[in-house]
Image (cartoon, rainbow, N blue to C red; front, side, top):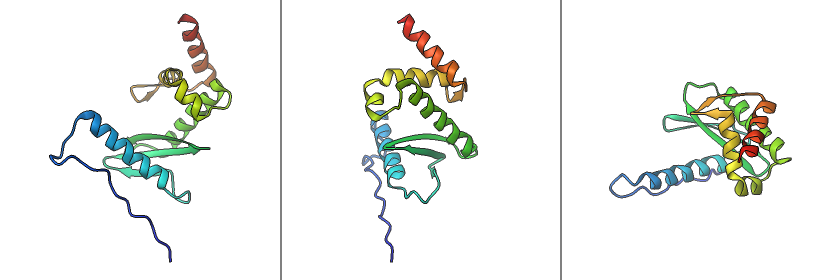
Length: 138
C-alpha cells in the first residue's frame, strides 16, 4: 500500500486578490512544490493552470520553464539543457553558488540566448563570445 502526499496549495488572500508581488511569490512557491515533490518516475512535464511546466534537474538545481499547452515539450527540454550547458561552460561546472553570487551574469547569458520568450541564438560559442564582449565593455 502506497500513499501519496496530499498537496496543500499556498494561502490566497481572503478577498481573492493580492498585490502583484504577493501573487508572484505564491505562484513561485506553488511551482516549486510541484516540481521538487514530483517522483523521478514521472515525466518532466506538468500542466499548471493554462501552462505547461517543463523542468529538468541537474544535481541539486532545478530549471523550470512555463510554456503554452500546445508547445513542443521536447524542444523546451532541449532549451533548458542548452541553457545549463551555457552556464556550465561559462562558470566551468556551474553550481548553486555561481548562480546566487553571479545572477547578473546568468541573466546576461539568458538575454543573449532568449529574448521575450523567443530563442535568439543557439550557438554556445556565439552566445559566450557575446557575453565576454559585453564584459569587456563594462
